[in-house]
Length: 153
Image (tube, rainbow, N blue to C red; front, side):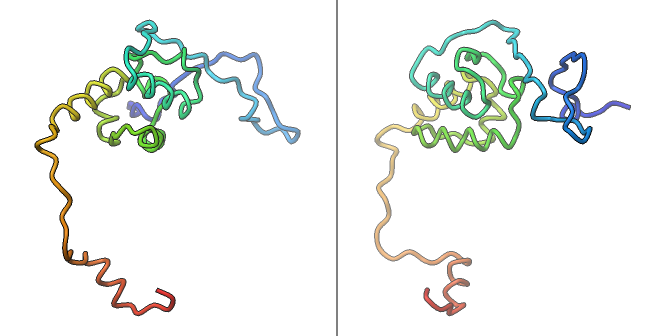
């Protein structure tokens, strides 16, 4: 039988011996980090969005910015679903709005930057609606919360 991709190791490193703790267990902290080599060749960011995405990926993946090209696959660089959530959060801090599903659909910085550009182009100034004013109904969870009659709230 075959294992699913997520259960296969991303990298293999040949070691003469495994680092052990003082009690003889595997010392995971002293295992060497894999040297990641991109197969497509390094391509530098071409615009501000790509540069900021490289900064975000580098911070989350723990890689130097020069190791991440715009055509490198997020998952091949060691990314996973949890790290993609962190990418979304850090990108938002830089003013870049992306979703986890966009990360899965667009797995390189170039694809992700194009996706962001397409979304921005689809919203023209005319299409942006003014915020609603006046009374707004409570959502069911808000209604439930206020019905609880909790102290100090």
